[in-house]
Image 1: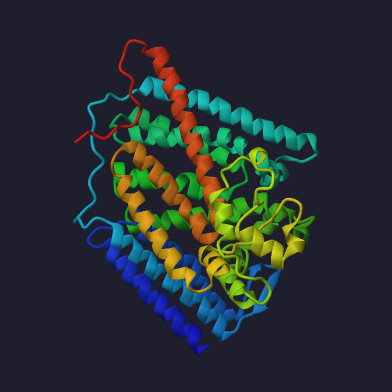
Image 2: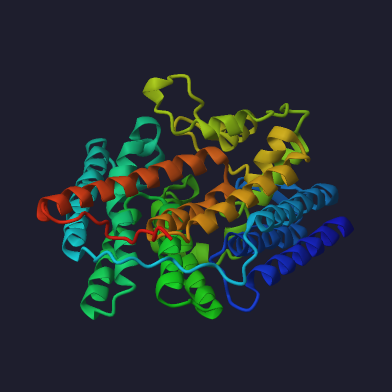
Length: 459
């Protein structure tokens, strides 16, 4: 496996270059380049080492194929090229300044009372929505864990609005964090901790691990890192390990693995200990980190078994926010959907379980190898623009960290799911700010309206 080893070494060099350039004198892990490098190191480089050692790949645990030296080397090389051109696009756009501008201050006063009343009403909305989902599951004969595990059934097609209502409180908590993290009032900080716990419970009841990690905890950490106090690399690694064990293993076992056919009749604690004992297979053996596997799979199958899509899955991604009642024939999915339904139709099924094509895999699926550097440079440039735009005000910053955190879903999956998730999250933020605006206007009819987050100065 000489070529595979060389490709992994090349990827490591690009990762070292990327982290060295972006971190510079300070640990700027919250930048898009640093986050992409960290993700690639874990999900691609780590999976590449695992694949090199065990000589197999596949999009799932029950689909494992022998890997060739050429395919592994090609797949790893495409990811190295993707990272290199992502950085090229990013630094071609990023303004050449020694440091990013601070979020501008404003003379506006903080509206704590309207803010926390808004959180209360949004919590009521989120609780009643999740109770509606749980009652629906109970009426069909499912218990709590089974209802949570069927998230694709509840939230697909027209069920997306349920996610907006469930997550409105969570994004209200992120708005509150922007205000409270700047406050030295210990009472407000304690209240914020309680609010964060409520948000995590609601996220856990959706059955989505990505909603917990990418949709809430990562944006919250980025807000804390920038607004309150920088989080060191050691703390970041420690928190990451704890989150992996709690969300990636314990929570996964509770809402997924115990319902697998092979685990039927097994007590949940037995399944949990088996999962803990299956490292690193549990993570890189087809259960979690499968982005490199999807890339290799597409390389080996296209265009012989499926013609290049020439942008079809990306068009499906861009048009994902269009409500299905207005377009009944709207595609059911993007790159992941085409990949799974074309090569693993028996797994696609009624609730449309999808395997990960990956960011690079979807580019290759549409345009061949040439699409990888071009698409990566475009996304890198867009990320730089978003990162700069996010420094103009608190509202911009909130939107930017929400989108940047969700880019993990883009790198791991496809454009269709990424855009769908972003639109739902932005609508949830807008709904919370609408609730806040109405409450503020009721409480301050004669006052000048202000959002709970700062606006940029005109200068």
